[in-house]
Length: 88
Image 1 (tube, rainbow, N blue to C red):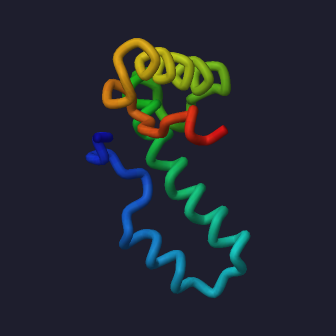
Image 2 (tube, one colour; image 1 turned 90 degrees about the horizontal axis):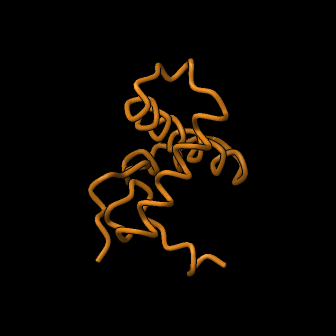
């Protein structure tokens, strides 16, 4: 069973986006942006870097580290809880 304790988009936030007068692509982008803002805060905390100072290299390295944790210790050891094998 996957650990769902860290949510990047809550049902309440998703409902707020649904209520907005936006097209479907705009709603998707709004949800993605909300989720990304939360993930960037996690990355910033993990790298001890202010969000506004994060670089593409730091973000990519963080994803590599998280993916390595997932491969070596299982999905519950990582921050991102998806199973890439089921996405392909």
